[in-house]
Image (cartoon, rainbow, N blue to C red; front, side, top):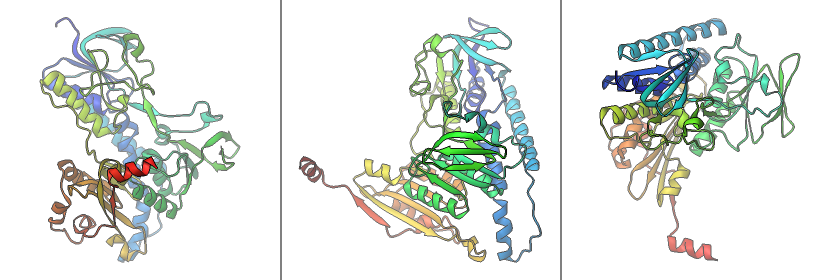
Length: 469
């Protein structure tokens, strides 16, 4: 069998690890994968997939309300949380079984154990209590929710992990955070009928996104009855006879049945033995890798959220695939991180790709900004008034569309297609030359003719003179 037990040993059977294992096995490598929990990782078990199912459930209330505008008489409706959770659990179990079947069909050995590094080619399997060796080791353990362990009363809060398994829908919930997970769960609980508050330390939610998306979603969430508090954080959590009270630094007392923390995620590296074998780590524990995923130890690689680069499931999958192609397939193409499209499954939904307007001002000398705000056609007969927005950021010197930002129904679906165009470097003229599909929301992207605003950087000489004075 050679000098090693395996050609590749993968620690962690999430999206990135599973893809790497399957592709490497397809190249003829002897592969094993160790997972201490369930196959599929965060995305399948406690992340993207179950979250999207809950998002779907939360939007039916709108559909029932809007039906009357189209002549439908909808009788009395009621929502049952245990039914939803049971259905979600069945779907997650189905997907986990499919992941397992795919690994087995590829010839990958699945080991139900925690893998810990013991050397550059050695993995200790906790539980079975034995060591295995591999020519190459891949770490794909993902991330985990952050909690402020120093916060008094932190033991009373939940994270997204526990939110998927609550026995009943809380009547009220306060969510700490302002990123993907926080705004998505705020929409979920609000849509299902819970009194929902979101508290975020920053000046505006969704840091790093285009400002028009941030303010637009904030306004829409408020209109839907979600209380959004910015610029404040919890100072302590108090447990009472009726629930919890979150006390804030600005003196607020936010009472709720549940308090959920969604303040980001950290690389899951505890107990992996990285120090023991000399794997370099970043400030937050993230494994430092080069463009191929190789760590500071030549035989050890890492992909996905454990490296804290672009923490998205499709990115982890592409990183895992690229790793296997390079190490076992003899290919040279590394993962590209340019123009990665992403969606936030808030209500309303966000889709975004490329540069925000603020980022584009740092990289370009001249910009034309095209913005359309409109009431979706479906709402015109319902009485609902939740505007959609479509925005193109165009480099005025090259005419290239460097960013596209959408807020509204099906924004996640639309941005996948637009992402191809931005990745290819399509120009505004090419958008304009595309015949619209009418009547659709997406036609706005090819019918925007007049910039909402133009921005031009000052002449460098003028900037230097002004700085000198």
